Image 1: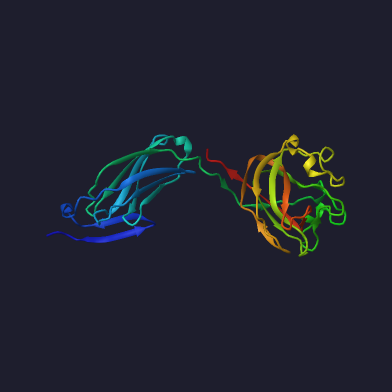
Image 2: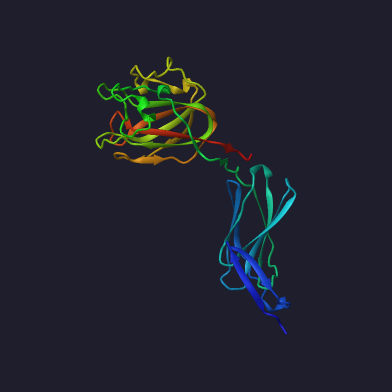
Length: 298
């Protein structure tokens, strides 16, 4: 007498099969998959294919060995998906040869497919962000306005705010330079717009870093310097990223994602190229910086 399949569990797309059926010949040969392809991603290889239209496929299995570690793996997904992700990879593992096969309910394997791919470099991992205590005396701008100095972004109060010069036109971009007090490998920041609805805030900002900063050579927070007249690359800056469409509105708050820096850095250069209302000045109530440890897997 044939014994029946007793349990089928699908967990996260992976197939876990339990059966007492000792007559595998009762199931049709598994129908084949088509259009198998591999896509590289950070720390991953993503397999995709086209499933058959009939029901003679129960699950698809990928089998591979990482030569660099000597470890072999099998991963399975059910008939209800056409994607399998091979993760926890490093680009330095090189090309990985993957065997892909369809199976029926009797665990009989179908056509063997071979495909080779290499993952992209794995993304770094980050520790818990830690808020840095900023020294208001070590924050500088090229467009100072004495009534609302740059130090107000680090005074812990959203009632006070920094305002770049508006009584005299200082050509954009306007800069805000921040001494973190220590090097950071990765960071995130949070800012709060000023409480004044009529004021203009950050809309487009480029973030640069540097190893050092000399106010006497650059912006001391006292002299007015047209931003379009300077080349900050001469200060050893490295462009890290650009932020666009930052929020407008009184008291609005923005929290950035974690930003892995190109190298450990102590000084941040916020270069404002566009404001929310199109003015040639901006306001900012508070700026908080959080440092994160970073592990680069390769």
